[in-house]
Amino acid sequence: MSTTMTKRKIAIEIAERANLTQQEAIDAFQATLDVISDELASGGHIELRGFGVFEIVTQKSRIGRNPNKPTVTVTIPERKVVKFRAGSKLADRVQKLQK
Image (cartoon, rainbow, N blue to C red; front, side, top):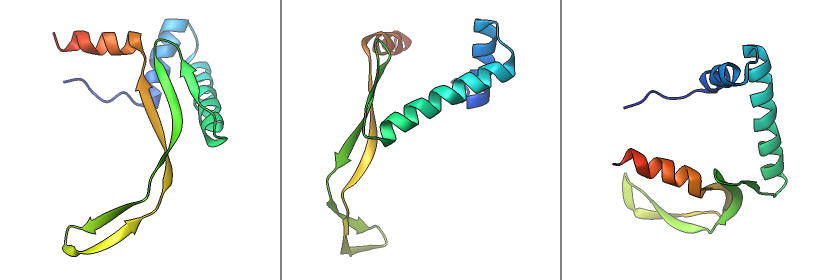
């Protein structure tokens, strides 16, 4: 089982692969995350061909139950959520892990 890849670990890996200082890589990675977040927050979607698509979808309202009081129902309101669909290249790489 692999370890969790944190933002800092990703930035260090970027620095090594792109021949950047760690601070340059951290700044570039943070800027990338900011651009993605801003676009999604404005209702847009992000398409990274081969990697995947980030988009905002509306989750319909639904009835929920408290596990401690199963007879009591509550309405969970409609909300916006981020959805990610893996692209073909990413999906292929993940499939190879299973073999």
